[in-house]
Length: 259
Image 1: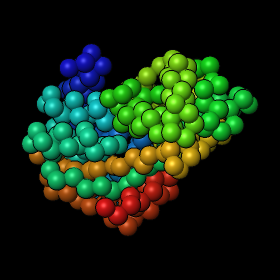
Image 2: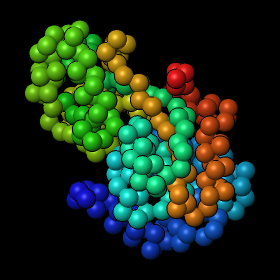
Image 3: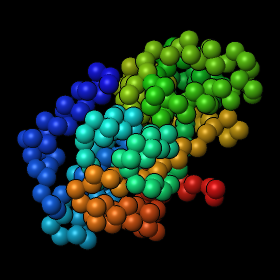
Image 4: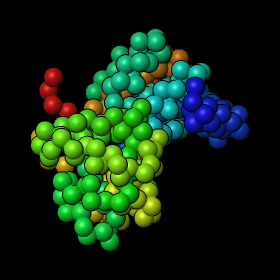
């Protein structure tokens, strides 16, 4: 267990003990969500609470790999929504999660400091002095590596190495990548389109060519140790419903292509 994972587990458990995330009462629904889902799930949580008087939706947003680690080490949320299928499948294989369902997809973009004029297209990315990306074990980091591998065919075999040479930080969730660019601590970073939308006006956005880009798939499932399995199933149903899809589209998510 990594030091970062241990810290997150300890923090979450301390919050539970203090009653901040739960005591939890039988009417609390605990949702572990990928960091990029924060705004969309906040809207859905509010709607769920209105439709279920007396129910409180408690969310924990972090990197999917950290949420998976917390569940593997004893945390018992009701619902888990991941930014990739790898971490969800690991929980299913361990007997910790029920059958997952894809509910949304996301696209990747490059965000750039607003005052940095030298970067105009994705091909210019190696011109940045400081690039920040997700760590390899984080979904956004794994997707970024796939994009760089694909870019070698279109932009030259040396393109991935030129970008890698400018990477100054590898973060544990996509919101940390975004924050470094917003705060001017990095020139550019690779994030989801939904994150770029959440920072509208604070960054410039460079599109990644479709032939290079990858699509992030988001699965959701109730957990086998869910304290409130009935509520968990209803929340999953809301996320997958037409009204849930509309809330996700408003946040910038896109439907997943048919299998």
